[in-house]
View 1 (cartoon, one colour):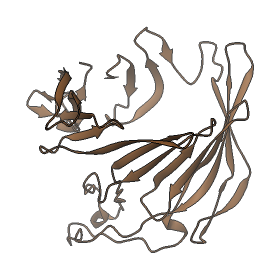
View 2: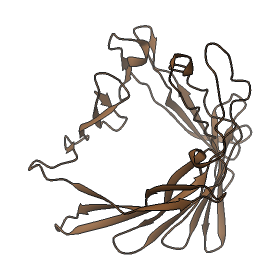
View 3: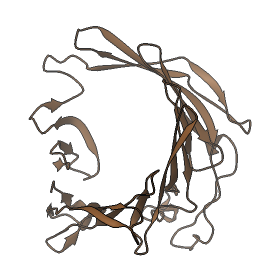
Length: 280
C-alpha cells in the first residue's frame, strides 16, 4: 500500500513495490477510485482508431494507431468523448559516450531509423470541439516543445543539457537482455504567452545544488529534496522536505515563508528498494 502526500492510497504489486496493479485507489474521503463502478460498469471506454502510417520530420515512418477515443459519462449520464491524435518525432540516439564497460555491460547507440522515433500526442480534442495542440522538439529524448491552448494562448519549454539521472545497470545486456538508457533533460524555462505577452519561469539550482524556480517577477523559490530513512534503509528516491519563498533573489532577497515537511517510512523486509514512503 502506497499513501500519497494528499492521503490517497494506492495498492501496489506484491512482486514489485513500483507496479500499480490498477485494482483500487482510495482518496482522502474514503472514496474508491477504480476502472469500474460498484455495478461493474466501465468508467472509461477506450476505442482505438484505424492504423495509419506516420512520418517523422526526418522522413522515417511507423505504422501505428491514428487516434484514441476516451469516452466517459458526465454527471448527467451523457457520454463525453475525448480524442487524442498522434504524431511521430525523431529521437536523439547518441548517449553512450564513455558508458561502455565490458564485460559488465555494453552500451550501443541506436542507429537513426524507425526505431529511433517516438509516437507522441499531437492533438487533444475535447468533447466541445476545442483542442490542445502539442509540438515536440525534434531529435531530442522526446522533449515537449509547446502546447497551444484552446483559448489561443500557449506554453513553451526549453531544456537543460545532459541527463537528469544515471543509466540503469541491472539487467544490462551482459546477461542477454537490453536496458534502454532513458536520458531526460530537466526543464530550463517555461514561457506562458497570452495576448502576445510572455511570462517566463526559469528553473536552475542554487549554490548548494537545490532546485530553484524564478518567477516572472524575479522572485525565487528553493526546493530541498531528501531521502527518508526507516530501519537503517533509505527510500529509493527523494521527496520534497522544504520549500523557501523569497522576495527577489534567494541570495540577496528577503525570505518570506519556509515550509518544512517531515516524512515517515516503512521497510517491508525484502530489500532497501522495497521501502514505502508514507504521507507526512
